[in-house]
Length: 108
Image: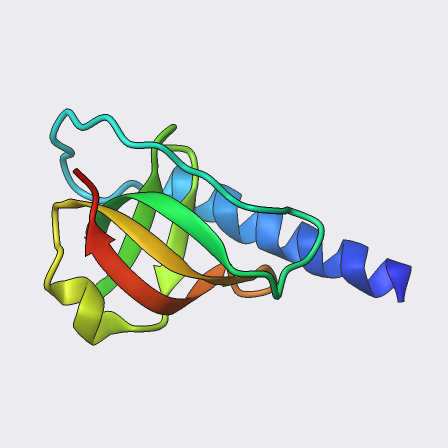
């Protein structure tokens, strides 16, 4: 069980690193923050803050430090916020580096 969790986290880290290496267009100067409630439980609801961008034809969330990119499973909702600072509430699937979106709202 513990080995499986470690393998999943390593896979997620690998995806994050790959996402950072492949940049997405130019970025406006924005100040964002990234928060999460707890890192130990992948199924716990978290709040992610950042900017919505398009990468390879899909909407992604780039966090504040601009070092992490997250896939978003709700593309329709994400499209409404392209280029905007947002708060995404959802759960992170570490294996696929995808946020299972519950809600997206503008971050003011």
